[in-house]
Length: 120
Image (tube, rainbow, N blue to C red):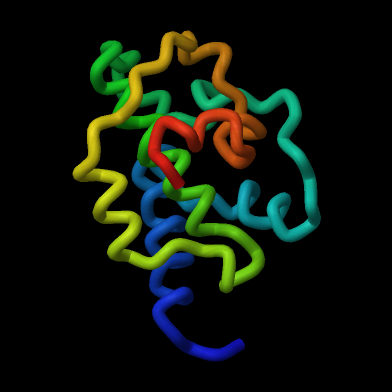
């Protein structure tokens, strides 16, 4: 593995997921490498259960962090965004979406379905 800025981006994705989950995302990272699709795992199932359920505005922020984290964890380093792109995602206005937390799957977060909100 060549050490470059894409390694930092991957590490950012790990830390972002760890912040959402309240623990290291080792199971998710392993399943990403084994091409497991997380078809039925919901975002609400991996969030830190010690915290109260998020309000709608906080949910929007959680989804942004989760989408960015999964983009950063792309197995192909060339497909990962730059940190500049990531920072711009956090600064840009999110296109609102009306999906209940219990219906958002990890598959949706990893796929293209919600990325249009961030223009990634």
